[in-house]
Image 1 (spheres, helix red, strand yellow):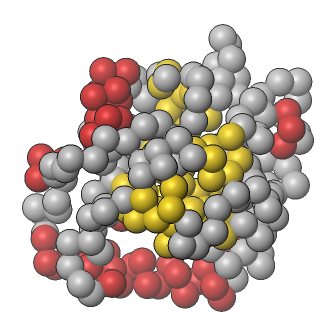
Image 2: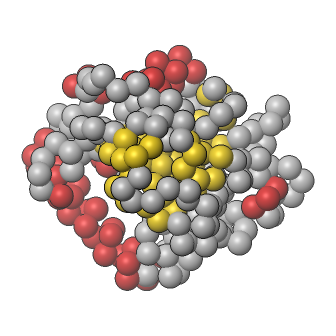
Length: 232
């Protein structure tokens, strides 16, 4: 998640950034060069991709070269998805409006069974792709849903304004509609997804193991050695 300079004057985002920095310092001193990775990860949860059809991995990999944010521990294995056409474009015509983008308004689904523990749907979409984040933005995830999948949590972010279809406490099944793709971040219409597991009880020592057992197979085959490949 890229933060514009103006956004850093937003007290909510500034506070979140400070907490994230403190968390990274704690993670570094605790784990140093042995940050938990996919080699240490195992579970019995089978996830699905949070959409139907063919999308493109814009950012994300289990390898450093094409990682979403390798040195940002809490987003190391996050994935950004968009829809592209046969020419690799993410939008039709000029792309000035959100509606020009192929993924805008597409349905997004729960990647696994679980309980909704947190959500936001009130953040307005940026009026045009590529603009700065709203200076009044309270959360860099924009509109999002967090699902407790049992021992792991899935986060789906950057949903469209007022599009989230679930509430805190709702029990969802894999494939349940949870919202629609939006532009509640900064660069362009897309969704972000990551899975995390709480390693320590201290919130400053959360290590996000954003690794999907189903996605690992797909991404290792489809992304390497190029970061922009198709996922279906």
